[in-house]
Length: 311
Image (cartoon, rainbow, N blue to C red):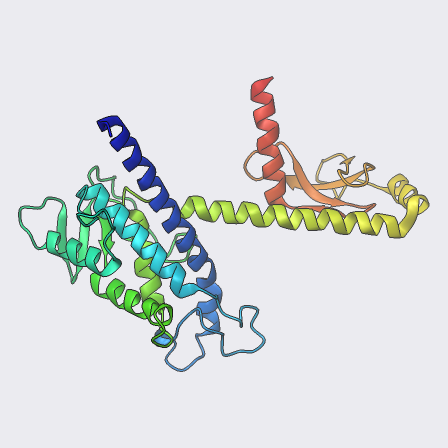
């Protein structure tokens, strides 16, 4: 294998590891706010597994997150392998090419932090801090201002790797996977995992979260279109025509009626323009009741923007 092929293989592997971590971490993070609220009233909520069935039987997520231990283990292993390969290429694997497990990777990182000869890696209150190669300017930050409602370290410092918490999280996640009972993944375990996204080899949770939001919006829009089409069939053509003739713009917002993409009547009331691209309106059709969300308006607005650039 040539040097160029070796470099390309390493690049692809790094991207795959980052993507796997991002998918797993985003899946876990999506459940945190609801599960955290559901367990606040439970005995010793800090020690409860946030992905276990909630104590309130009426909770929407009462079934828990199936496979949370597997998501945690895969996300942790992928992230640590990506970080070690980025910082100390080749040391993430054994001589036979097999990648080290999370426990061994964490031990290696801790050893590096204790070695004065290793640059940019230091011990920080029991955790390892990998300092950024190119520190960003210090910016004011609130206590919890990320989309996951999880506090992150200052952008100017680096990536904090909580060795003890991650080792314990790995042990808990391994219990059910290895048939040794049910492990308890606490909020501390998951928060420590999410913090790894600050490393230069990762930075993928935000992208994965955006994909989740987009996919959810597209599914919801498809359901809204199906519901509107079924409603249109129910009211019949005569009633649809009557509604279309009586349609008026919504309030005094200054938007004209537009053609509905479901019933094709000029009866779609605009409540506002897409928050980001501003080219497509969101609102509701007064004939078939189709609702276009702001997220879908942005999706279509982006397509319209690309078409405008190409024209």
